[in-house]
Length: 318
Image 1 (cartoon, one colour):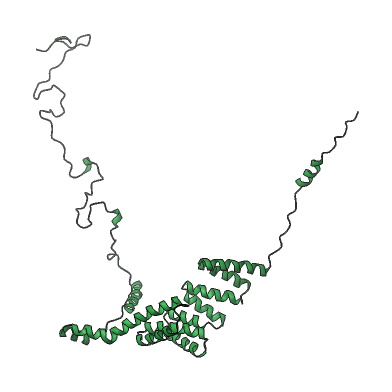
Image 2 (cartoon, rainbow, N blue to C red):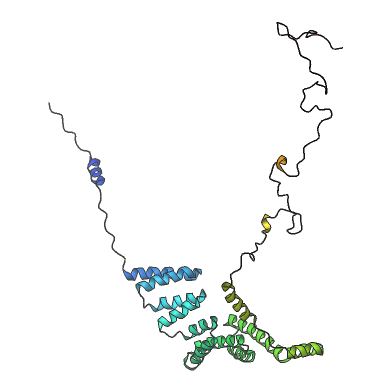
């Protein structure tokens, strides 16, 4: 009889279907708007966390997707100023072609282009808004202080102090007071302090100081030295190595303590200061034990058995 057909179980059909390879579905590409939204979310978190270097990279990603995004451009400019990349900030301001006069003046001030910064500040005073004008006044006071115009800086800080609210802008009020005291101290020294110090000196020293030429600025001298140093190459004999203190043994002073023995790594028998030990008293110069100096050699006769003639082996010496 033919075998009876085995009925298929309910779970076998589902397992066969599930064992088949499922074709992966292609993911749809993310739209540009969604990518920008994600990047701006990351940018806000990076700026709030103080990760400015990563925030600049995120701004660059946003600008690759939308080069004309004003928010990304302004944020990148702010980040460049925060990270003290003033040359890159000036290049970005030239590309933006937007009203960034105060940022441009501040960047010029930080790269020590005082004349250009002063010209931009004049433009802000004539055409700028009220908020920009107050920031321009702070920058103008700092610029005057750097140039040695302490009275001008003092007047600007006095005007800012009168219009500042100590309750609403406590940080600004504290900064104004600090800068005002610094300007006042410099101005007092120029007007009265210098003359008082000169009057206390003897006449010979005072006349010498008054007739002496003005001193050379230290900054210019350092710049010239740094420019001239690379052009001069030291000769082979002029190169001197500094002693590394970490390799000097404890208790040894370089130049004071005596130098170590140069033959300390050799065997004692190979050193020049090695001397042979004294010979033992009565040694016979290589003779055997019991031999006497000057004794004649006596032939020894042997018997057939190989024993020496004379007293036997067990004989005692008298």
